[in-house]
Length: 203
DNA sequence: GGTAGGATTACG
DNA sequence: GTAATCCTACCT
Image (cartoon, rainbow, N blue to C red; front, side, top):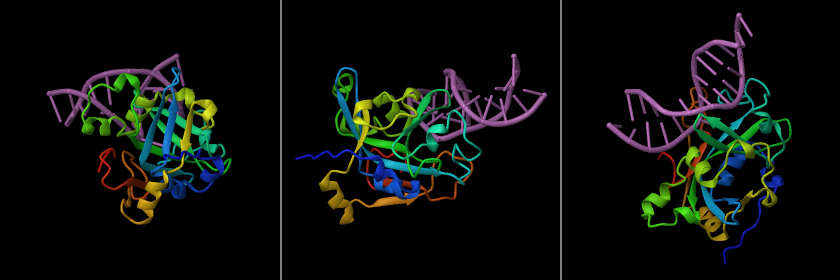
């Protein structure tokens, strides 16, 4: 019923501005040490790439941003404001700095510890924000530079067929707009989100 | 070796 | 509106 096909690096080997909207509706899967697998549908993304003043790799390659220069399919995770982690999916080709920031997920199932009585609304907000989704999926800097793959307990899956149909029929439009929380490159329309999703970080 | 500031969040 | 909190990048 719910077919799950793994996203391979090849599928991510295009410009971040192409991949970012393509990732809307796809799934981030995280396997915990206890064997639990938590899945979240991507509902909001932003693209960052070389030549973009908001991109962490705008100046030069450093220890922190090195994963952005990897081939497609790697994870780039950094700490922001000393508190929160942000999860990026590296795109394009090797030595071309580019990545898609995953800004919000709609959780498809919940960690055991969270499975107590929460309202639908609260569940929808559990991964509504780049820092929040990292916290609930246990993603931190130790994931940065790792290939996104089942054997690394963090991977991506394609859109369920039913959602693809909806998207193609325009039933759930993907909205394109400007990015959030940056001081430079604010005019670039490189943020995408699934319209009407209660899990988008800001609407 | 010192330090300004950040692709955020929660709370008032 | 603003505090929390710490790495990173950049300067000396």
